Each structure stands twice: as structure tokens, then as C-alpha cells.
Length: 173
Image (cartoon, rainbow, N blue to C red):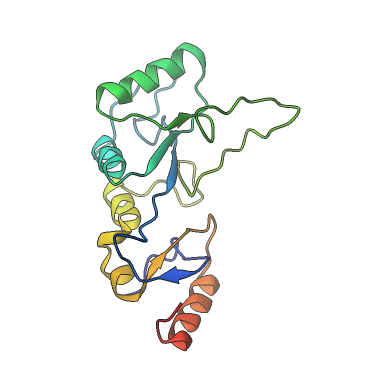
């Protein structure tokens, strides 16, 4: 069973153990991703969005709300999620203490994974997102190794190269 072509390891692989499990920074859009797109109002929650985010938090992933919202609308989105049990590590920032200065910093945030309805292939269902990100329970990665980091635009060639390296190393990365 090959992993989804959209999730390809791009750096070293190691066998999964509780000691080497790595949490990820996961940037999540709000409108069209957590809730239906009704901006500036808050749309209806998308099926399994909040449940998935709560479970990712329990696994110690750092969630970043990454949205076009600002001011009152941003506060409402953060409060909507907080009331449902989702607390964000940062909001529209790479880390909580970051101060945006257009002269010295970029608006692009640092995250391992971006979940957004504007992805080139659209937003997969939250059930699929859970299975892709819940790597410690993914049978493929338990058998073949754990990706330390996911590339943002993986290709089949990257996967093929990784698979060839894995076979060549006889599982000793």
C-alpha cells in the first residue's frame, strides 16, 4: 500500500517509536476549511473539522489559525473555536510572540502542514486529513518508517526516489 501521493517524505525517515515521534506545526484556514465559507459571518461547522483539530491537539501538534480575517471577525473565529475546545498555538503568526513588521518579516508563516480549502486539489474531507496526519497509527508508516517532515508540494518522483532509497538501505535510515 503506497501513501497518498500528496503526502511524501522529503527528509530522513526513521522507524516510529514513542521517543522519536515529532509533533508538527499545522496551519489551518478558517472560512471554507473549519466552517462553510460565509465570510464575514461564521458558517456552519464542516463535518469532523473541530473533532479532528481537537484530536490533533491531543497528539501535541501545534495548531495555527491562518486566515484572512482580522479585527472583530478574527476574534469571533478564535472564540468560535475556543468554545468548541480548539485552542490555537498562534493566530496568523508562526509563533505567539511574533510581531509582524513589513520591513523585516514576511506574512508567510512557518508550518509543516497547511490545511486550506484553496489547495490546488481542494480540501479533502476531515476524515482523510486525520488519516494523513495521524501518522503514528498509519500502517504504512508503522511498517516502513515515519516521515520527519512533509513537503508542501510533493510529487510522485519524490515518492519514487524515497521508496528506492528505502529499499536500498534495507530499512536502515
